[in-house]
Image (cartoon, rainbow, N blue to C red):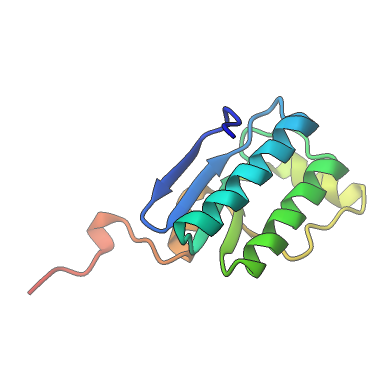
Length: 126
């Protein structure tokens, strides 16, 4: 099922992004597509970029926690990247915690946490 949300494969890592107009149906379809690809493609890491989300409500927070838990059960490390400061403040004010969700400032940092390096940092062949 194609959600219309971008999910790119980079080796054994998937990079997906959530858009600002995320609705419940799209969020659930994204979850289904992502977990199916994790299982079918031998994915070891997933980065979900939420930098376009201006608000994260309790439903989206729950979806992210469920994705992280499902990813762990499937042997995949999941990192949520790009949370805006206003979103973090809102989650805190509402008492919502992304339990079990690893975060990174941006997608580049998340990729580094998964072992990816920028070309200039990669070791040179001798």
